[in-house]
Length: 614
Image (cartoon, rainbow, N blue to C red; front, side, top):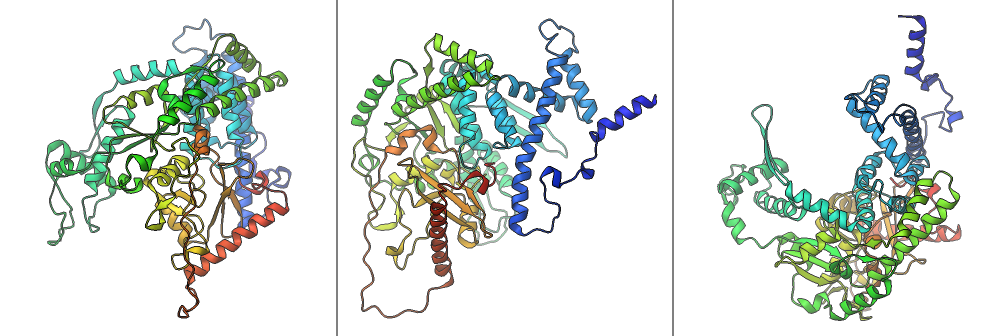
């Protein structure tokens, strides 16, 4: 081996200058790790944005290799080990990774360069985490070469730049929403092909274990999961198995028609032997919540010609709709229904969303056109916009399945034709406010408000959490004062938010402070903030049900019933307990934060004052 070769390999491995030898101050990094808690968190947030920039450079170098080594030959290269494979092999060898990992890196780089240039800029600017890039690339793979490719890229990038936090599930839903709305025919064809390919399989594993699996429609998968989870829950607290192990045993019991029982071995245990067939026979039907708008049920329409017609159709649907309480005035609250697994497929329709959705589409096209005119790197998007203008664009609505994410409008319509489907509008299309609480209990939300909040929030609202709102709790943002309800913590749309059990407990018993209040710039919408004990504030989710179904803005709830203040002759009581004092301190802290932000002209906090929306 020549000295020249050794020097070249050594230089490539360390990138010229070893990273530990570089000056941290020159890179804008702290020179010491002796920092307060907030300093460490600031550094982590800055490094997260820096990781996005470094990942952008990594993809740029990979894309440059593709341009030099692959593009000149890709149209006529029929070799088994073609130019693409050889380019990836160079990357794999240089980085000591597998060929698969190198090809995945190259795939992402090419997709960001050719299909998602604006999303690529979001990665460069640190507004999207590198961990979300693969999700975005994979969920937009089928738009490649379509006339609306540039519009979808612009829509996703614009949403990512909104203030707020993201999670994997919210990024996935964002991408699916943008693709499904602009590709209704292709989505239906792909779904039909996917249904034809459903299968059942088994696989032998190690140590005498095996894997059993099946592919099926998303709603059927949800039903199967709920049935198994229900039976697996038929144990006492002394059962020694993990949740997953109990679910595995419950699935076998259902298939085999065998007994299922708790393994605690306690003679007094009521779950010692449970008849799986009896549980399935006596259990109520499974709930699958689907949120959509009424125009989605009628099918896709040309976005350039039928905005007014769809608005009129939406008005007719509103007139024909029935409010939740009118359909079932004595019904159990929805949150409890989910726990008891009653009802079948439920389509919650917000009948006033059609016009807003179409307006959003037109705005997105205008933004894409203006940006492509001034951006020299957006030639592909300009071609896409011109092609989209050449032929009418069909825009379809979408639906949201709790726990599963976005589904296409065609899928929604298929579910709506199911005999067991119950279409229940969230609003009645009038200005009459819906009841916010149960008549006899101002602490508990009404069925309408419960459904509305879960449809609005979709997931736990804590930054980065993916737990479905339908499986979590409804939390009073300002703690409800059971002793003196008039002091605050009202049960209202603005006063409630969805949280998973862990984050609900963390907020209640920890020193974290969350806040939620009406957005003065967007009536009907809300601003959320989360403040850690050391005072750093993080914005809430950037993408919620409002962004998919804008008609949710139009649903209005009445004020909670007034509570009677304590009479003057009430016997004096001892000082407030610690929990109440902590709640009062939180209320004061929220007010101080709002006043400080208003004085500084910040509403909501500027991105520099919050970590990147990861």
